[in-house]
Image (cartoon, rainbow over all chains, first blue to last red; front, top):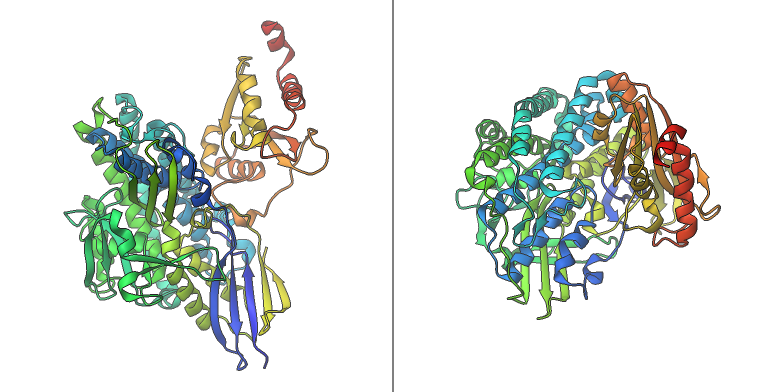
Length: 476
Length: 145
């Protein structure tokens, strides 16, 4: 038997463009599998030479799905450069907008990208595993997804100016205060949105028993977890210190100031992907593999800090007797908890008197040559580091994008699922769907992670040990 | 009610055709017409289209040939690969299957080979004017004149 490689190119129902290769050895067994991110745009380079004031708008263009995260991290980095502390109202507006984005992004993943697998199963015909079939068989669920996303998008538009590439989050705080009428409209919708999010979580939990094999083999392995945490140890998406936890729940290092991230995070480069591979420096590469995003956040958080989400977190943590949940499939579960949390937290922040203050922005001029902004994006911890000259011109940029943090873990997940489900003698559509599904668990935003934009179609290539394509399977 | 949706990226040259056309239409104060301007089509915009009996989508589409031609294109990307932005046809499908609304619809697309800048301002503007003329009912135009 000759060695050969199966290529899934591109991976479908994710944000951006990637392909997966599966190497088959002489014994007709899956030997290895990798995800290749094949886009490149180079934001870090072309931001150099621009005024620092442009950075929120420029870096927001990295992505059409999570521009708020880039704006938040960018403005936080500039806050450091200016040496300003935004007023409480400005911070709370940023937090609300960030949570609204989290909600609409998680909603997109659950309802539009992943739920067809939950409803019809991973082995269902490909023509049935999509939102159009879901609209026929589960119309209320499809409407729920649209309503929840609309709720999140409207908050972003009302508080930050635009749904995509918002302009209202600015260095020093926010551009304008929240109007009372806006606040009331959002609060009116909260009960209905909470009900939708809770029913989504209930649906997921009720169907979990159908997917035990996927839970066990779609990327179930020990790894570190990283997220930002606050002093109370509650779920945090806007500010705090970095924390690394191991797979047993031991804290390896916490209280790391985001500006010191380079002391703990290295970035390896592999020839097969434009996506860099960050790792926890003290353990080296690739042993320092860690996961970020919803699963990491709920594993590290002691509580959510909101009533309904806290009840759900207790059930979640019981899955592994209080130790970190290691199953990548449960990213979906964690995102659903975060959706509930986001709605509750938005309500809490809106009801806070300080949020409605007229004082939403602090101003200053360039005071420091370097700034690091860090926040939790839907897909994980996001870093923006800028260096500026005294005249405010950007001289250097380093971005660690949420999805990039998961690169090593995504590769480990792809390998595990390929070894479990792909039979080289009989390559089924269901098996290939599971290989893609492990990537969807991470909900990667590959356009962000390489700061590039791609297209999506689908084909599978089988290559021999010399990487020569010997078979192509169309999956579009 | 008629809804006209212009979508595109104003930072990408002629990709802004739909958005720029909406700006011109806004000056006409058209009766019984809702104008929407957006970066891209997303699933939740269907909630703004529930009362529409006619929807007009205005976009730019890339082609090396026939630059500045106005076309009606329904070429559909793969439905199965739904992402955060969707096509006019998908919008219509969602309206029909989830909200029992079956509006008539048209897609006006200006063919462009330049998403970096507006290559020929005069021809670009002429395309906008032609489309505006086509979309504005005579009685509305009379009022304006």
